[in-house]
Image 1 (tube, rainbow, N blue to C red):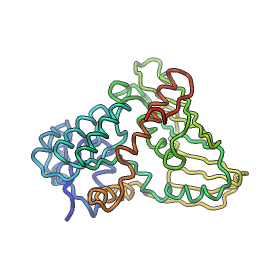
Image 2 (cartoon, rainbow, N blue to C red):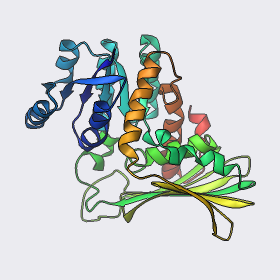
Image 3 (cartoon, rainbow, N blue to C red):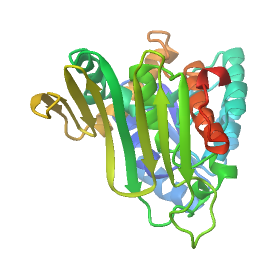
Image 4 (tube, rainbow, N blue to C red):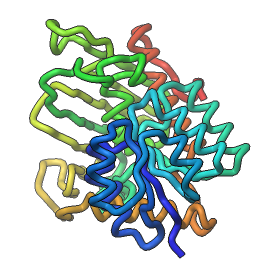
Length: 330
């Protein structure tokens, strides 16, 4: 029997990833949707043949939901999660987990005390291209440098709630950067030191305080160190990680991973087309197994406290201009 699922927030992520993922899921079925826009709700409830709401509280009261996918602006996430906890509804939450370290700790405590499962959406963990990284990394000798970047061009970084720290919790680091930060923690663990510089200067003619660009240096006591460039203003869209070792390199980008010699010659390569809808479905089905107690929750509240400590260390470093140990922020 499939779990009854709802979706709160009908933006691009929900319409292009999560709802198609639910429609293909073996573990859950979509029964209700919610968005603050009556027009959007009306359009999609008839297309999807599900119940529609403009108030998530009303949806949680009216529907017997087993789980909900939450894809709302960052500052709204907390109240949706807390309401779901009250109704004992399991939550699949679009990143980030929270807007601050303190909020993350409070939500983690609530989830633990209530017994509900919360999993943060990190689709790359369900894509074979990304899961192959560790296997290839074992073949490049002693790793010592990581070079990573995730950039795209948005003409006006000040537009909407993403331009305001008070609503977004930050800019490119906590938003789009969450995915790349997850991959760094996934592959290498939480660094021992972080040094960050941020910019809100891409559009000096506009008023906003959420960083449009960030350059982050991070290091480990083992000797591994690296840099991470994040930007909502540098085009074209680029997402990549390059790990350099004593006997070769691994180059990971969206849809492709390669192992190369230190001179840049390709030794082996793996690519995958149309990976994201499949990854979204795999993620939902995995979460259903987590709820059933059949799989560990690898992206739960406690795990994402590490992500939030990395992010908090970046913002603290940007203010103080000194290295910060993210482990001390946990």
